[in-house]
Length: 63
Image (cartoon, rainbow, N blue to C red; front, side, top):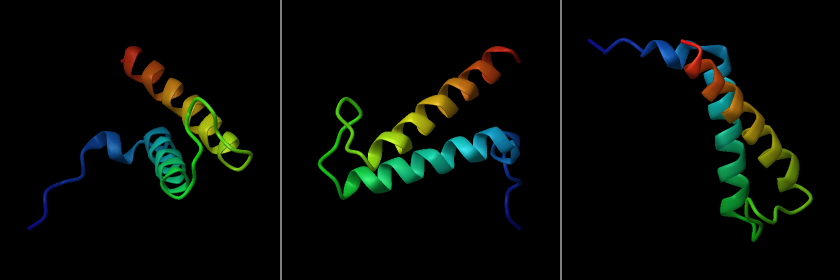
């Protein structure tokens, strides 16, 4: 028997946030860019991650 999935992992905002995190970390692992100085390809990935992280944190504060 498997354990139930935590409720936050079923939240569409959380799923998008974690997808953005995965995309950024995958890109950053093979690139020399950083959050402070992202490359042209990394810039939109980092911006999306930042926006979704802020949205997720706001969601948590409103609970």
